[in-house]
Length: 299
Image (cartoon, rainbow, N blue to C red; front, side, top):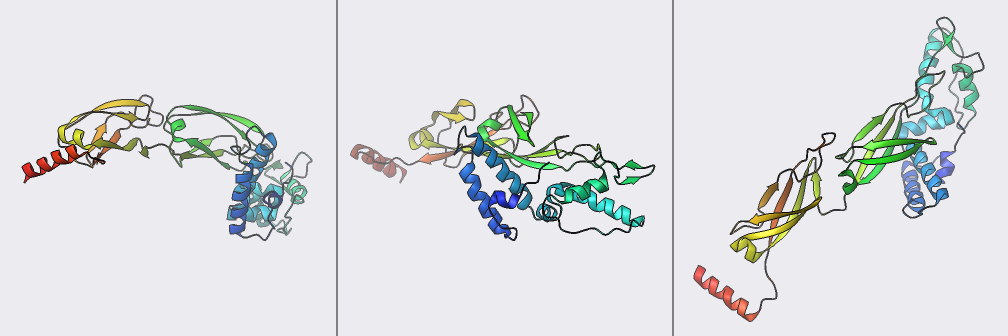
């Protein structure tokens, strides 16, 4: 794994504040976003590098490890643990200098082993196996995409991962993909990839768990006299009977017309419709006269 200077990727100095890093990331992410640069492989690669840099420098703990251990920052905790174990056995060596780039790699290999012998050993001279670092990533979906099962291909560390995303995935939900994290040391197991979903909603529906909510306008005459209206559900249309003298704010439930329930095929939440009774405008003289007659009857 080659050393990548994430500060250069974001175009900020090593002493940049968290605010400056966040600002630089947002600016570059907008510039190289795939929506702005369709079918541009170079921009796509740059966008991935920017997001990777933000995953490291945008996290206080990750940035601290990166500043100290360079490209081996993902193994910082394992190194510190092994260093403590060696110190307890009287190893006597002192470590802890800030390598800040890629120079730490040789020292890391000499301590943990890497195919050249001389690796850190315990109990019979066997090298200690270290599990790889867990990785975190985000995947954005539209709400309409989340309504049906999706097949996606992600590229992580140069490898394609094919995913089947069940319908009903929620905003902020995280799933674990075993074995797709950082590589282990000394034939240790790979870490896991934790994928967080960001669901964008550009529909007139509001989602709350498995239920959907929507406001529907009803004209005054239908509200007063009753009638039938057609409303849009998330995946089609439905006819509703409006009772006479329906008030604005009245709620009705359409059972099973909500969002799919995650990993429960064929099961759905409910759709809740709220009626907004509309007062007529631009009345003709005749209509105004009729309303006056109604008012006089009421009085």
